[in-house]
Image 1 (cartoon, rainbow, N blue to C red):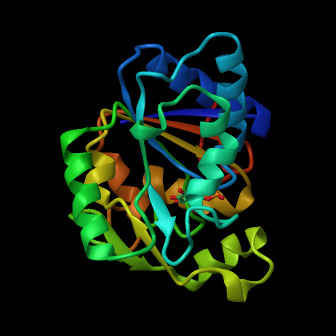
Image 2: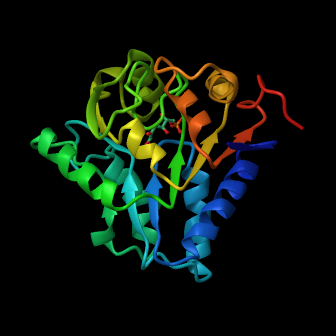
Image 3: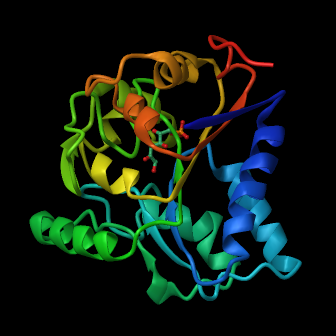
Length: 241
Ligand code: F6R
């Protein structure tokens, strides 16, 4: 079931996303599923501000959706680095309780270990962005709805979308390790944030499209509690108030 909220701009959607996450964090000992990319930056900024006013993460554990294969933790485009710079270093997370799949070493072992941790620690809240092609996490079009943690070859459109963070497209990794669809759906509540015109079609498919593996986000129609927070551009192809 979807609850959809539409705001004029990125600031408005970030504030709403913050309020949804703050409510969960305030419960203390909770498990968050976290995302990277440009969509959650405003939300993380607000969490950092709220921490200065007393919001604590000391009992929170977190699991990130994904990591690029081949980038070390300290590479400036690794998702570990992103999380550290935007959130972890500014708040009181116990770093032993923050988890990302490692994009190096024996990826089969990393995947099995991450899957085992996830299945024992279901997310109270899973934060998601969405790809312009409808991916969630890095579950690209065609990924099985039964998938667990796995290595995936990134689609060319995803590499193009993410090239803006790198010096050139050639530097964008071809592979990532990601939570599977099954891992995402285990969350009690899902918070999906999207802004900009290039997300409008994926949002329409997610809400109104036929459920199919070619458009991974459509599976969210089967989840009981999905809060969708959009700006006007991302919502431009759907009916809303
Ligand atoms: C990030 C992730 C991706 C992004 C998506 C949107 O951890 O799993 O699914 O959420 O590619 O990225 P942005 O927010 O940069 O448009």
